[in-house]
Structures are given as C-alpha cells and as structure tokens.
Length: 118
Length: 478
Image 1: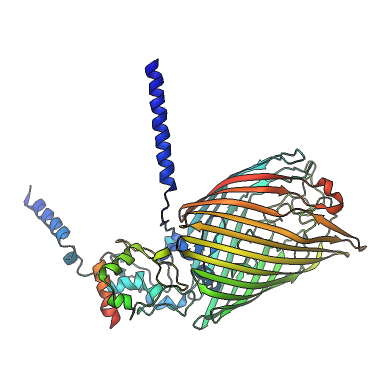
Image 2: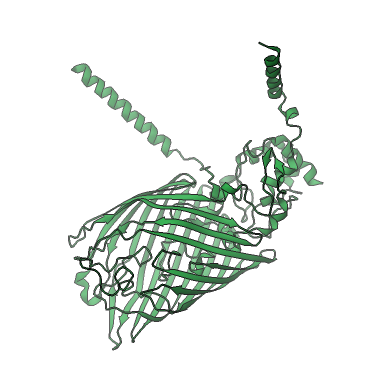
C-alpha cells in the first residue's frame, strides 16, 4: 500500500469514526428554512392562521422545549400521522425527513431546542 | 416416469407456496410512503391533500383550502434562499416559491383500465372499448409568480366506453379518445388569519376552485365538462371567491361557451355558499349550496345528437346517439326522445360532505347531494329532473379501501311545447369499487357496476334494458 493510499484510507476511516466533526459546518438554521419553515414558520411560529394551515408552532412548544431529543428525532425521521398525530386540528400529517433531507439530525434538534427558543 | 410426476408435484407445491408468500406480502398493510414530484413541491406527501389518489382524487381539508387559496402561499416567500445559495451542498433556486428545482414542477400520470360488460336481459351484449392506456398526462399545481398559482393538466383521455344497452343501438365506439388541456390561473390575497379572497380564470366549471366538482360519483347535471376537450368544447370560466373566518365560503363564477355546436349559445352564472364545520384534518365537514343557471347547456333529453360527430344526421351505419367524448351524460339521452335544445336552465345542489383523514387507521370521504334542475326548451316545453345521490370512499391505513356510489332520480319529466308531460324511466344507478393503494402514487381499482341501463319514456317501458359491467384499472403518478 502506498503512503498516498494509506493516507486516503486513514482519512476515510477518520471521517467514518468522527462524522460529527466532519459535519461541523452543518447549517441547521438553513436546513430548517429549507425543510421545515414552510409548515412551521420561518421563526418556528407555526402556520396557524394562514391558509392552508400546515404545521404547529415549534417555538415555545412544550414538546420541543421539554421533550427528549430522541423523541424529536424520531418524529423528524419517521413523520407523524394516523394514530401518532398529536394535534387534533387541520394540520396535515407530517412527512418523514430522512438523512437525505436532514443530514445532521443532532444539530437540527439542538437548533430547535436552542437558538429557535431564544 | 414416477420421478417426473414427483418432480412436477414438487414444482407445483413450490410455485403454489411462492404464490402464497407473494399474496401474503402484498396483503400486509403498510403505510404508503411514496412521494412523487407533485407533492415534493410542498415537502408534504400525497396524503396531506388527498384521500386516495386513484383516478379522481378526493380532498382533505388541507387540499381543499390549498385549492381555494389558489395554489400559492405567499407568506413563505421570504423564507427561501437567494439565487445561488447552497444548503447541504445543493444549489438552491432563489425566488419566492416552494418549488425546489425545475424538474419538481411537473408530474405525470398514467391510467390504464380494462372493462367488460354483461349481456342484458334483452340479450344485448355490446362491444366494449377498453383503454389499456386510458390516460397519460402532465400536470402541475403550484405558484408561477409571486401572486399567481396554476393548475394544469395536458394529455389525452380515453375512458372506457360502455356502449348503449339499448337494443339495436350498440353503435360504433372508438371516438371516446381525445386530447385535453385543463388549466386554471388563480390568485388570492389574505385579509386576515383564516380569511382570504381570490379570483381565477380557467376552462373548467368554477366548482373546481373549491373542488365541489368531486367526488365524481355524485350526481351532476352540469355538463360544461373537463376543460378544453379538444374540438368539442372550450369554455372560459371566471371565478371570484373568498373564505371568511376560516369557515364561510362564498363564490360567484361566470362561464361562457364557444364551439358549442349542439348547445344553446350564451353564458351561465354559478354561485356557491359553504359552511365548514369542525375544520380538523381528522374531522372536517361541509354544508354547501351551489346554484347554476344560464343558457349554455346540453339538455337531458337529446344531449349530443346534434354533436360534432353527428351534426344533425349521423353518417350511414352510425345509429347510436350516445356517440361523444366522456363529457356527455354517460349515454344519457332518452330513447326515442325528440331533438330539443335548451333555451335556459336553472339548477342547484345541496351538498353535505364529511372528510376524515387518518382517524386512527381510518380515512374516508362521505357525501350526499340533492340536485334539482329545470330546463326550458327552445320552441316551448321543459325538462325537470331532480336527483339525489350518496357517495362513500373509505380507506384502511390509506392502503385498502372501497368506494360506493348510488343515485336515484326523484323526478324526470319531459313536457313538450303542447304541454303534454311524459315521465322518463330509469332505475337507481350504483357502482362499487375495491381500492388498493400499495403506495401513495400507485393504485389499483376493481369496479363493478350492477346496472348499465338506458333511459326510456314511462309509456315505452318495454324498451328498458340493463346489464352489468366490471373493470380493473391502475393509476401511477410520478
């Protein structure tokens, strides 16, 4: 194995072992704007009161503020519909957002529980 | 030889087992999770706006309000990135729309179905035209500018053609295939939370703005059709409408016709007044009064005898006056009726609708309509026809469902210019359809119609005849 290929392999392994570090520049606020804001509002205020209403407020939402990170991740990844619906209102079901849409879900949850609530 | 028989037996068992496994796999309820580009525009999935997507989709509250609002959500304009920005290394379009990339704008649908028809009691077994490639179309729904939304579908349509069951009038088919273009340009303005006004221009009846045109299984005597139906008809419809306090719907629409060879010339006026109860995705209910009156409508007696195909007198060998595109009234001419044309008409619909999405594992649309209409005829005389119909589409886990529709006529009288009234006889119409949606953008349907029938004058009831039909179809949206 050449030094060059060894180095490349090491980088790959390091990237696999430390994905968070490799994804440190993840723009959670930008991803929120792109993926979430059309339903939950650009500041997390929700879209109740506009037509059609698409999603509840996330800012000051007790579940976002006090709920476990794992529960929030689970909803982002799997969506929410049918018996799992929480809101008995006119919001449509929440679609699932896989890693191709929200690649760093830890950062996204941190944003929802952190900067968004300020 | 014995080994050969044993081998055949084993092969048979394996094949049978494989078939059984396949059937079980197909029958396992799964949450449908496909996402065609039609839905990617909003990031939501099909189920957000539709309860079932087969052939004619019915709507959840979200879908209905989205249509009423004009397919734009101007309040999100500020939330998207500027041109050239990237997120997750993906270049983003700038601008004001929810669309992600240009290829997300367009979607397509493919519908195929096969149909068979029984022999009638009178021994008539008509030829039936199936359309394995029943419809292919491109469609788009969404904003095209800051303030203008567009619905359009362009393609060709070839519904299954069940020939007339009238003895001696089986007629040729194959003319039930045509290109079409539907469009509606809409705009709207928010006045307050839950309150907006809007207007639209299109080539379909104004009841598409609110989607009161659906469910398609409900009775409708308004026949200005699926817009832009090629050489046959083209209408222009203008609508002014609004939703107030998130629950009151008011609308007035004006419809003009052109190229209506067989219809009266003129224009029509449509109004709708709706009240929205409950207003939840899991429990939505509407009460609606619609009115429609004017001069431009084919009659319920001889709707298309004087059509483009048979202008006045049909060509030699063509004896079936039901020849038309799908916008006729389903072979709805009355046997031996005189040729008449509408001078003017008045009608209304009283509608109740319950839309329930994902209440547990259950979703449904249930609806009922009472729909009277009176036609005054050129040269005197009139036609009065009152219909009542009910409709139910139900889905379990959005995957397995059925659809049932039933309608009857409470009154159907033809009065000629001399004042002589003759009743029209036909029995209640009904059909049942099994639905299977293994994915949101793919559906299979099995339809059974126990009564394919004709319409006759009461005093000629001996000419009444009926049969059955059944069909299988698929729809794929991508």
